[in-house]
Image 1 (cartoon, rainbow, N blue to C red):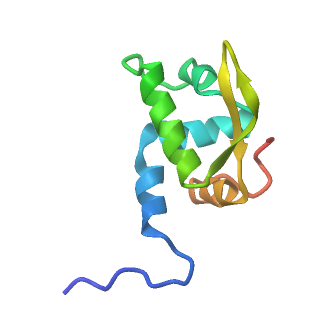
Image 2 (cartoon, one colour):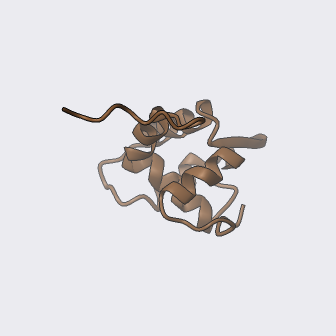
Length: 105
Protein backbone atom coordinates (compact mmCIF):
# COMPACT_ATOMS: atom_id res chain seq x y z
CA UNK A 1 0.00 0.00 0.00
CA UNK A 2 1.20 3.56 -0.68
CA UNK A 3 2.18 5.73 2.24
CA UNK A 4 -0.07 8.65 3.12
CA UNK A 5 0.71 12.15 1.79
CA UNK A 6 3.13 14.30 3.76
CA UNK A 7 1.38 15.84 6.74
CA UNK A 8 4.30 18.06 7.76
CA UNK A 9 2.94 21.31 9.21
CA UNK A 10 3.31 24.13 6.70
CA UNK A 11 4.07 21.81 3.78
CA UNK A 12 2.02 22.71 0.73
CA UNK A 13 1.88 20.10 -2.02
CA UNK A 14 0.99 22.80 -4.55
CA UNK A 15 4.52 24.18 -4.15
CA UNK A 16 5.96 20.99 -5.62
CA UNK A 17 3.57 21.23 -8.57
CA UNK A 18 4.43 24.88 -9.16
CA UNK A 19 8.18 24.29 -9.01
CA UNK A 20 7.93 21.28 -11.35
CA UNK A 21 7.25 23.52 -14.35
CA UNK A 22 10.52 24.46 -16.11
CA UNK A 23 9.50 28.05 -16.89
CA UNK A 24 8.54 28.74 -13.27
CA UNK A 25 11.61 27.11 -11.77
CA UNK A 26 13.74 28.74 -14.48
CA UNK A 27 12.39 32.20 -13.63
CA UNK A 28 13.16 31.67 -9.94
CA UNK A 29 16.66 30.46 -10.78
CA UNK A 30 17.22 33.53 -12.96
CA UNK A 31 16.32 35.69 -9.98
CA UNK A 32 19.43 34.34 -8.23
CA UNK A 33 21.51 35.89 -11.01
CA UNK A 34 19.54 39.02 -11.83
CA UNK A 35 17.01 40.70 -9.60
CA UNK A 36 14.75 42.46 -10.22
CA UNK A 37 13.71 40.69 -13.39
CA UNK A 38 10.86 41.07 -15.88
CA UNK A 39 9.16 38.35 -17.92
CA UNK A 40 10.56 39.94 -21.09
CA UNK A 41 14.10 39.84 -19.71
CA UNK A 42 13.65 36.22 -18.63
CA UNK A 43 12.44 35.20 -22.09
CA UNK A 44 15.91 35.93 -23.48
CA UNK A 45 17.54 33.63 -20.91
CA UNK A 46 15.17 30.68 -20.69
CA UNK A 47 16.35 27.75 -22.80
CA UNK A 48 13.32 27.16 -25.04
CA UNK A 49 13.09 28.64 -28.52
CA UNK A 50 9.35 27.83 -28.78
CA UNK A 51 8.58 29.93 -25.71
CA UNK A 52 6.47 33.06 -26.19
CA UNK A 53 6.41 36.12 -23.97
CA UNK A 54 2.75 35.44 -23.17
CA UNK A 55 3.73 32.00 -21.81
CA UNK A 56 6.47 33.44 -19.60
CA UNK A 57 4.09 36.17 -18.40
CA UNK A 58 1.49 33.54 -17.49
CA UNK A 59 3.98 31.47 -15.46
CA UNK A 60 5.38 34.56 -13.75
CA UNK A 61 1.78 35.36 -12.79
CA UNK A 62 1.43 31.91 -11.22
CA UNK A 63 4.56 32.49 -9.14
CA UNK A 64 3.21 35.90 -8.14
CA UNK A 65 -0.25 34.58 -7.18
CA UNK A 66 1.36 31.83 -5.10
CA UNK A 67 3.45 34.45 -3.27
CA UNK A 68 6.88 33.29 -4.42
CA UNK A 69 7.70 36.58 -6.12
CA UNK A 70 6.52 40.16 -5.71
CA UNK A 71 6.28 43.07 -8.11
CA UNK A 72 8.43 46.07 -7.37
CA UNK A 73 7.69 49.54 -8.60
CA UNK A 74 5.35 50.59 -11.36
CA UNK A 75 5.50 48.72 -14.68
CA UNK A 76 8.01 49.99 -17.20
CA UNK A 77 6.24 50.78 -20.52
CA UNK A 78 8.80 48.76 -22.51
CA UNK A 79 9.87 46.04 -20.06
CA UNK A 80 6.76 45.45 -17.94
CA UNK A 81 6.69 44.64 -14.23
CA UNK A 82 9.88 43.82 -12.38
CA UNK A 83 9.85 41.03 -9.79
CA UNK A 84 11.96 39.81 -6.90
CA UNK A 85 11.62 36.81 -4.64
CA UNK A 86 9.65 36.86 -1.40
CA UNK A 87 10.62 34.92 1.73
CA UNK A 88 8.45 32.06 0.39
CA UNK A 89 10.35 32.33 -2.89
CA UNK A 90 13.61 31.99 -1.00
CA UNK A 91 12.29 28.74 0.49
CA UNK A 92 11.39 27.59 -3.02
CA UNK A 93 14.91 28.36 -4.22
CA UNK A 94 16.29 26.20 -1.40
CA UNK A 95 13.92 23.44 -2.53
CA UNK A 96 15.39 23.82 -6.03
CA UNK A 97 18.89 23.34 -4.63
CA UNK A 98 20.05 26.91 -4.13
CA UNK A 99 21.54 27.60 -0.69
CA UNK A 100 20.02 30.32 1.51
CA UNK A 101 21.31 33.79 0.72
CA UNK A 102 22.46 32.91 -2.81
CA UNK A 103 19.72 35.09 -4.31
CA UNK A 104 21.10 38.53 -5.10
CA UNK A 105 17.63 40.17 -5.04
